[in-house]
Image (cartoon, rainbow, N blue to C red):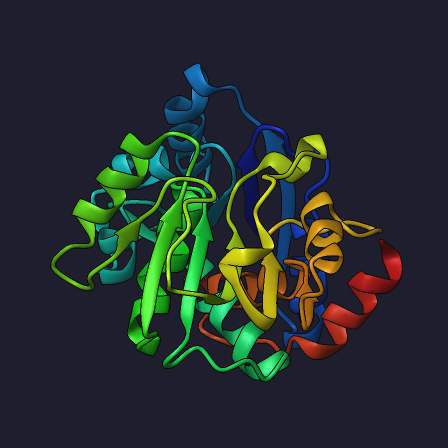
Length: 272
């Protein structure tokens, strides 16, 4: 049996063990998966110890995605573009590799599961951390009309724009700064939902029947989702589908087989 895990802080809320257990059952793979709370000062040593102990792969969640990328010896193009990783593995030469499956998980949930068009749309991303980086690395490949970042700290947003400058013309806008551009899709890539907080955004920023997507999820609507419904969003989604889809991509990278996701999503939703 090969051991896998997710590392982060906080980690108690993570559903990754349930998801990967179902994937293993569906694909008849002999794996064990656990969640590990890791403090910032011990993260590099814990990653090293996990793989030295025979671990097969790690998922990495907030707040360590950028730190995970920095630890790796090699990185996939999408992780290199994002400068953040949520998936780690060890190759046959003992080199630590990094990948980022967040973006493809988000895009598959939007396009395949919810029939949302990304191409040609004006997209707003809230946040400029590792989650936003992972999302942007895949969103730009879907050819949106525009991609704008809003973040409480504009210097982080400016740094993110600079990192992607060779790939796409990303805009940075101060919170609630008015513009002629109206957003069709807003993605909450902040972790404020874990504290039941949200940014208060003006409805004047958004096109009619805009789509709102929160990367967080829970048994009930997040604060961001409640805000979006109060602003008459046409479609309001949480990140449960993204969680399952990005996990399926990680599982495929580690095990060489891609699990089906629909039944896993339905079961997970019922268990919230």
